[in-house]
Length: 105
Image 1 (tube, rainbow, N blue to C red):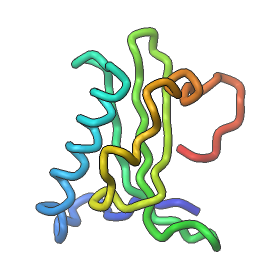
Image 2: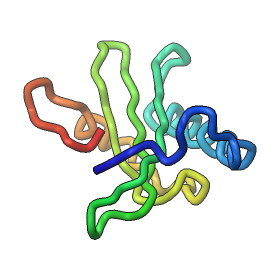
Image 3: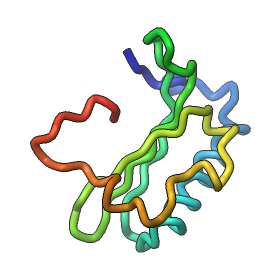
């Protein structure tokens, strides 16, 4: 079971985490050559499933043709470095295919 790492209104570590969310968003935008108007969502989730990392970061973005792409990084957002993102040439493989099951995000 996945749940957001911090609930709305919980700002105890927001001053540390907010820049990290923005940095991952910016790296994603650059890595996949996204337009300024393309949406990018970065979320940090807790996982209670055995063997799952305690915190993971899920990134989703939508391209010009409204295709949703997504990937996970099995680290808290504050520990992510640019090299943790998938290679740009994997962009098409990150696309969500309508009708295919996806339990990750």
